[in-house]
Image 1 (cartoon, one colour):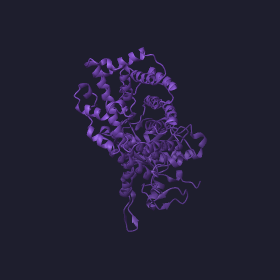
Image 2 (cartoon, helix red, strand yellow):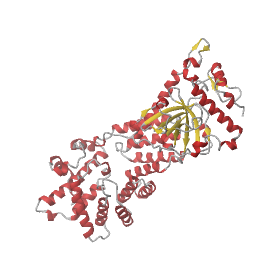
Image 3 (cartoon, one colour):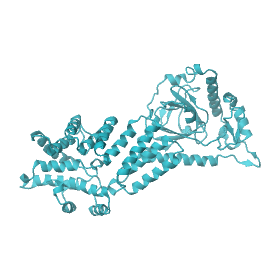
Image 4 (cartoon, one colour):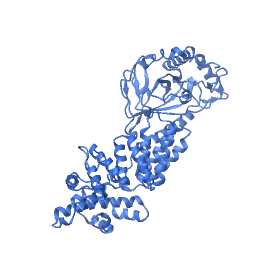
Length: 540
């Protein structure tokens, strides 16, 4: 007897009254379901609440059938297909992979025996029964250590599903499961293939729309991802959100993914749109049903960090303005003593000498400057942080220059204080942290383009996750190294930043190069004499 033949209200009443130990074990943790609450939500129009109740009924029906077989003398009245029908409805449910409910291991073993027996003994002719038997058998052919509650599946199960899809090309569940399984296996190309195939037949299938968006998002390498790829990501999540109910458990994540894509598409200029999608994500979280809480998503933490960087940067700009007495500003060296730091002066002058040498002999420079950095592979492997919410800030002073080290679960905010040196395989910057300390920054695996000078322009803001301090030749190659494009974010800085003290909105421009801005004659003289501005100053 399938669930559609059972009175749903009566079944829910039996669920509320049930004291079965097997049934109580279905709930994960303390995630019990208040049936009256969800019934009220469903009656108010919540599609998700109605589907949660349906999922609840599916699970209960499977437990109920098993108990009837083992505890009554009327087990002959229950056919093998009764078990298969209930199990198919249960495992094919849209919210099964959320594991709101899951079978305990003892029940899984019993169900697996039933499914194996039915699969081996039934005459598998093409039809609805065979379709369901094949699907259930595939779900139970999990890899060792996994269960039917998981979407990890063995190669046998995948082959069964592929064959089943050929036999039943109009069955949405086969497309859905194949796309989901390949996503979890990180085979994004195959997952996208099955999602697109399914959407050709079922264009409003919510889960397939989400799987499509997720795989478009994942399959593009940060090294090669283009602006068009990011627009495709945003469009795919929009298609999902248009179709999905407002309280769908994946709606917040979709909004946050769109905001993240925008942060890479149009840094800083896209802040208002990022904030718009971020707020929509927060509003979507408020609509989530209790069974999907607490909600934890690292994309939200990443966006919040971007906003924090922008907020802190704006505050620093106000704090860093040099006060004036009458029309005569106080020397920047008095207000910011770190500007006279000998190590800072040494690094800036060396950086400018390298730029000057590249201009004098551009064809030879690729083999001279930073030769060790080019020749040496990283000693350590940088990786994107697993949980953005656990990141803690770090400064250059807290990073040792004695040996190579990756500072895990740390994030550093920097400002580029010189023009970039663009080489064929890496970009070299000179950066300053919030305390005014300075370091080289070597960026590898960055997609080179005609706009590299603009991308890494003087004054741009840089955030690095899990920063890697590389220790090589102290005169050329010691500094922060970034190998993973996912671990770095670059945002436009404030315009007309003073080349010496870093204040924004400087009003004086160098009359020769017409590139360097200064907030006072004092700063211009310091930059010229102390930091050798002449090395990078030309009318070209």
